[in-house]
Length: 289
Image 1 (spheres, rainbow, N blue to C red):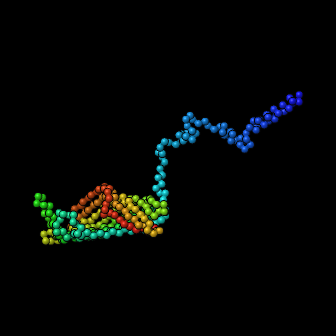
Image 2: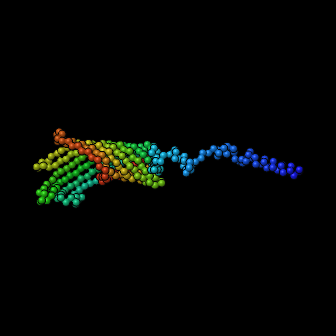
Image 3: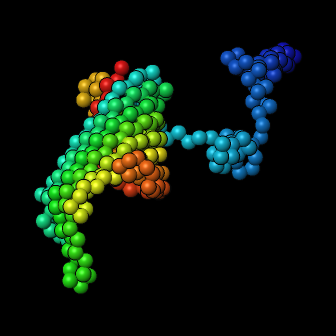
């Protein structure tokens, strides 16, 4: 009898230890057990994360811009101002005409001078808008030259006392975007879009039948061009630039006048050309404020 009472008391103690109330660990809240019990069952063949992604994200990013981190390196900061200038000067003489074999006895000299001050403001990091002005002066003199195309073509011409003078001014606006290529932002590339208007006049004098004759012309040009280049900081606030003209869209109008100022003819020309222009290579200097 005593053995039966002892056995029943042991069973009662075991039942209290393994009761449902004690099945949950004291360190684990009941709410977490409920959350695990109510978690959704994944679809066949897919993990839970893959199933959610397939339902909410399209296969291709059709509405999201891809960030290629081009502006990751800050070359110029927002709010800076840049004052710059580009200057070029070149000369031409008869010594440079070794390859013009069809011209004999040529006596040629000329020069061209161009200056372009500019001002820009950075509306964002590495992105600026600005204005550019320019002045160009060109002079050339041809003392004498003979054009000989050979006996077969029977074309022989001679020129004497020909002079050309041209003055022009330009006004334009540009948008320039920089991209740094080193971690410290010393070197960078830039791409520039420029819209400019150029006006000027040209005077041509030449000798005909022993008399000097003169013609004048007014020139007007609209230009939309693309000018990429490289930039390097020489000093902390001084940046040197080298840009290359790769062409664009141009419209030209030339109005020719006689010495009395009467219009004797007009010419219109437009073209779209994208290639390296060796006459439009600019070396400049920008001061960042």
